[in-house]
Amino acid sequence: MSERTTGPRAAEPRADRRQERACRRDVPHGEVPS
Image 1 (tube, rainbow, N blue to C red):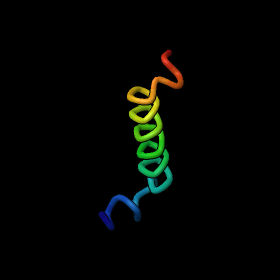
Image 2: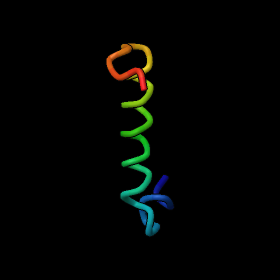
Image 3: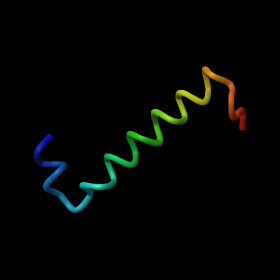
Image 4: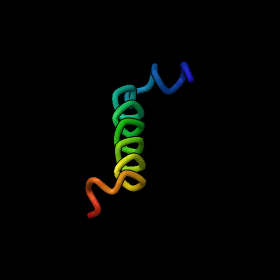
């Protein structure tokens, strides 16, 4: 965990987790059925 935060992709894993959670929440909720 600390290795990822220390790498150059420190902001990437956080954005990926936010996008993944948003996509998963949009799917079950059906708010944005792309």
